[in-house]
Image (cartoon, rainbow, N blue to C red; front, side, top):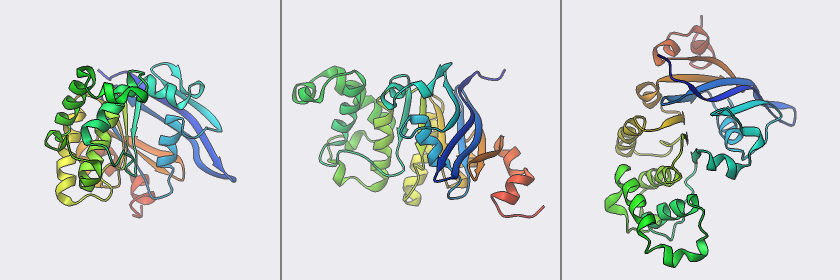
Length: 250
């Protein structure tokens, strides 16, 4: 039985000075799946993520998340209903510890002000869930280290931990493997394999080994338009994909 659709995008449009970054783009994300978005540079992958989170507006089309119209919600409103994004470029509080970064995200999700941070740092309601998330991401031994002292791979993992602290219903991952060593990539790939058992995930990633190993379904973007969606095997065997994305003929 096919899982219900959690996110439905229909005919989404975004123009920049007459150039279509999203060109009547349509796709669906099913509850519980890891859905990967691939495509050449400039295909519109990050533009799509920004439209979904509300970071940029759309010029046309519709986006529905669990039957709610996303275009009517602010960026903060979309976060509150369960969309969480990890960024292509690491965005963390460098002078805070790993634990403090996740605790801040837990605190923000609960709606508390950062003005009471000193008192909040002693609050078990914040520390316990933060520690659980760090354990899930394999960062428990680094909990008391400042972010600035963490490796690039550890910072990327911590960024996902911060996203998980918002208790997402859809986790948006924008090139989590970017800039990682082979060892770090292998570790994060194992973590993502575990996370897909607990979260619905939309993954943008250039590493095709990761994509074809982890994805339940893949959508291929070219010039802002989805040219194919299917299982990894279906995408491998799709002639349009091979010609447009892999550069093969016929």
